[in-house]
Amino acid sequence: MRQSRLFAQTYREAPTEADTTSHRLLLRAGFIRQLAAGVYAYLPLGRRVLRKLESIVREEMDRAGAQELLMPAMQPAKLWQESGRYAAYGPELMRLNDRHDREFALGPTHEEVVTALAREEIYSYRKLPAIVYQIQTKFRDERRPRFGLMRGREFLMKDAYSFDADSEGLEQSYRTMYDAYGRIFQRVGLNVRPVEADPGTIGGEGGTHEFMALADIGEDTIVSCSHCGYAANLEKAEAGTLTDVTRGNGLAPELEKIHTPNVRTIDELAAFLQVPASALLKTMLYDADGTIVAILLRGDHEVNETKLQAHLQAAQLTLADEAAVIRATGAPVGFAGPVGLNVSLLVDRTIAAGEEWIAGANERDYHVRGVKPGRDFSVEATGDFRNVGEEERCARCEEGAYLFRKGIELGHVFKLGTKYSEPLGAAYLDKEGRKRPLMMGCYGIGVSRMMAAAVEQHHDEAGIVWPSAIAPFCVHIVPISIKDEVQRTLAENLYERFLAAGIDALIDDRDERAGVKFKDSDLIGVPVRLVVGKQAASGEVEMKLRNLPDSMTLTAEDAFKIVCDKMRNRESTDEFL
Ligand code: 9G3
Image (cartoon, rainbow, N blue to C red; front, side, top):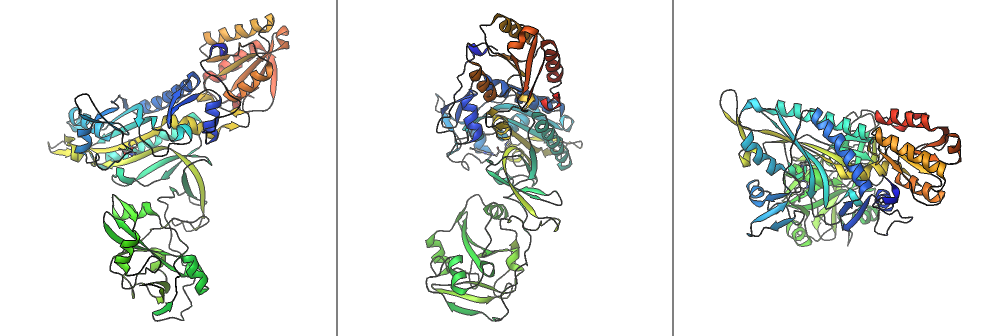
């Protein structure tokens, strides 16, 4: 491609709305342009990266035996009514009516559509297992789109769906997809960790993993053990039973009411009683689908609402409002406690393991000390309801310590079971001729999000440093002076030969100063730059690798050979030297 004709401008500064490195660089370098909040156009440079990402995903899906199809973005609302999800999703689901006033949704995902297709196409166990996938535009009307392609309202996703006869088959399909994901991220050149995750409302037979690109800007927190390799999204990371803090001092064997006038928060109570927050029992009231429940946590712990919602299988979970707290406890917010509280109690395992606690007395301006789990309140529903803390001991191996890192969710794989095949009637006849619901899995990768993650993981102060496998071009030919006949001829000759050899080449044939050309070249981030300057007279060029500081002079012939040889094998430029 000729830079003099490139359908893009580069900018020295990013617009103010750019809120992260990848967003700023992709805008400045002319890869994407925003049309509306969370809605982007891919200019030629961006489209070339997207196409390379797609082809790596496609190759690995095909290698895994998945069959590519393409489903519509316009989905009949009827299917979402059959699955019961039409009402479950609110403004995030983009809806529209056609000219006959029939209702449609713009697809945020395709479980309903693909299950309706399977209902028609799969009828015998002989057709199983089947995995189908598409690379297609999704629509989700995010309340706060941000970070450029990271959280858009229209984005490119690869979504795959597996169909099996039974759970064993599903396990196998899941493993096949899981392994294919590892190959995809490795080939793209992304540092990605699989972590155990929470299935959320998509539901399914338990067991789901997220593939997280490590990056400070990541919206997810990954918890990993320094010793046993356990890794999970913080939403799900297992919290151990902590008995590290001695429980009280045994001086209050019996329940003892204490007057705590207007002392409501944990910090106020800890200060008032001169005890650490870890000696306090925090009682939080939640409204789970209309039922009030109380969650009991140690004062210095944080509730994990994802764990709570998963345990309760609640569709809606919100903190109870002041009126509900007064109705349930007989006291205003800040004095709730488990003793004599007649709502179901969810007891965090660290509380159940404690001997005596200080808690609210369910009476304005009073708390109680000497509260004993099991004696003063039921510990029936004891579980893991809190966020783990950094440096905490791993709950799995009890040896290592938890390490927290930020991650960008690039992939998410789920075991769905019969959650969609049952309500939509997608079944098959087994060997004995019995009708059985298809066992499903679903597997997503954010293809456009991968582009942003690649920039977050691969950039420096001068611009983007594309991994070779997804760079918009393999080589950037930069003649210093396009007016100099010798330089121009040698540069054009190299350009033509690369094109003829099937190597993506970008040539900066603009009549610009060298400084501008080098700044733009560093910004766009093509892995190999061949500078055609004064040494052109002796048939030599300067090779500069984008990810290394120094450059070397060699004959145009050698440069041509090296680039063709390395780039054809898609080797990263690290092996160049
Ligand atoms: C909706 C809306 C947003 C959504 C969903 C449905 C996320 C929804 C979860 C999934 C699960 C998997 C197949 C590919 C991998 C992910 N956001 N999810 O179901 F109506 Cl508005 O999409 N689907």
